[in-house]
Length: 398
Ligand SMILES: [Zn+2]
Ligand SMILES: [Zn+2]
Image (tube, rainbow, N blue to C red):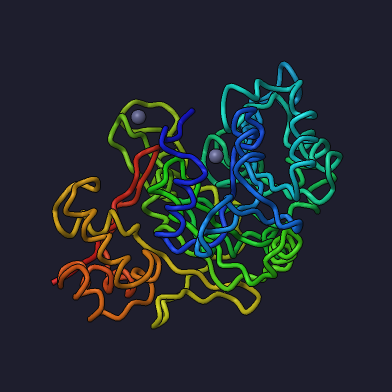
């Protein structure tokens, strides 16, 4: 459900190669048919890393990872409704099968690649670490209102509240599309935890829309060590304003408010009189003890406190080219420009991040080159997203 029909392991690998992504999650491993495909199409190297059978040397590695949706009441039956999305990583297919056996009684694993489990985050952690203690749990897109562990609608104020005695085993959180690491640096309980970013792809075009560049041995243990020790060269982020839940508001009422404005309105929509959907920025501000903002350095990296990996914010290449040339994202003109950029620069990420402006001009023309350079400088016009509506981030050029 909710993913492109064209997604399979080879289209994921092909998309990753075009983007310049070297490590992917194979995803959805609790689904019986997908689990069978993983067994048939991937070969493990014995260290927890997998490759597509028959793939070229440039083809990316896979790890076994998935997203699950936990839905429960706290306390049971009469209590408040909770919904939390979690990412799970497993060291091998034996661990995957142990997870499937434990989750089976708690949800219909065959109905969705991201299964809905009627289990609390705490009870999921019990089952996961019982299945294999080398598994890793990473709360997904933690600030989104409906499914983030800190979300305004059904989340918690701390990881301890959500995971109880397992909180210490949560080594990382995913910042999600609507927040970037800098926004998270002021949250006290995240000081010792890695802030990671992944594609949350749903379709091949979205592979690599957010990326974590780990400094790691290319093994499962190497990855877990890099997560636990924050051995991260950088993360590549959406502009958080681009995300669907950056500010507060009501989409249907056309009301978009900053956290200060919605506080002044007592959290009530001035149009319909109902409660506003409080976005990511609002929740982060309420759980932070300091504000953190950093200038964009020359090379496009935003540097933080010494203990924190830097990050950069990008506009997806397809969106950028489409907006600049004035054609649809799926048009042939945009497709040709992207093909040419990949051919000249090696991958989409190289084109976005480091390719020389003259190389970009040669590949896709002056306008596209200027737009890419403007994004690197942070020279942008921004309309933040809210209440499920994506924001707009466009380069200022000319
Ligand atoms: Zn999710
Ligand atoms: Zn309203």
